[in-house]
Each structure stands twice: as C-alpha cells, then as structure tokens.
Length: 163
Image (cartoon, rainbow, N blue to C red; front, side, top):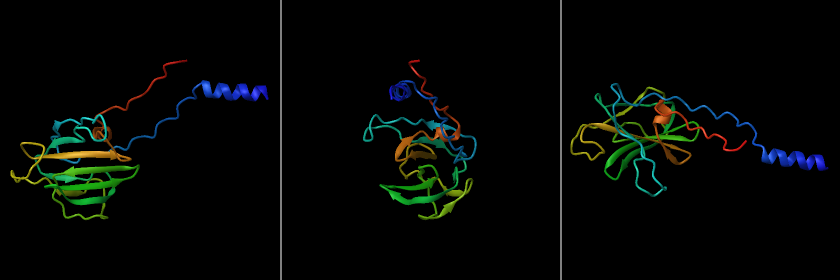
C-alpha cells in the first residue's frame, strides 16, 4: 500500500513529458500577392476590452479566397459592413470584412475558392484608408492572430521552471 501511495505522489509531483501539441493547420492567404500587413492583431486584455481582433491586409485585386475548406457560418451585414464567416475544422471560424459575396449560410467552400471581393466604394466604412481586408480568426470562440495559421508566428512553448 505504501508503494502505491509513493508511486501516486511521484506521478503528481514529477511532470510527465508533455504530449506533442496537435499540429496547427496551414492555411492559404485570403488575398493575392503582394501580401502587405497594414495592421497587426492586438489581443484584448479581456473579452470586452479594446483591441484589434484580426489583421488588416492590403488587397490589390480585391478578390478574397477561402484559406481552408469550410462551411459558411454567416454572410450578411454587421452594423454597416458586409461580413463573411467560415467555420473550419478544429473549432476555428475565420471572418472577413468588408466582403461582398454571393455565398449564403451553409454553403461549402474549398481552400482557394473565391469567396467574395473587397468593395472599392470609398464611402464604405472600413479599417483602412484604401482597399483592405480585415481577416479574423476565432478558436473555440476566442480571437487569435490569423498569422498563427498563415505561418507568420511560431507557436509559444512553455518551458518547465522546475526539475
């Protein structure tokens, strides 16, 4: 019995080797080259704090592409801008604004499909002074940087602080 207690105590005190993290999907960029990052992702301090919950990408052609396979989660107007959201595997939802699209909720999209265009109407409110796409990603409801899925950020690795 004492051996069992000691073994359990050691298992609780000595960290097991970390299981390898599930690989992140690699997505395609939603805009044509050249890919110019106009504004970075800025994580909010809390769910209701200010921040920039996506990245702004300059777009020369105006075409917007599906970065990965998915199903349209939302297509419509939010406040005064046309918005499109796509549900992907792994609890991920990507969003795009302003994007004019003919897609509707439930439509299936494949990686690389044209999903819409960035309007060039200067009267349309947006994040940029010129044509740009706001591209956001939520993982299990929390906003994360889209660059995590485009290869722009290496994953954080927490190292042990004790032996």
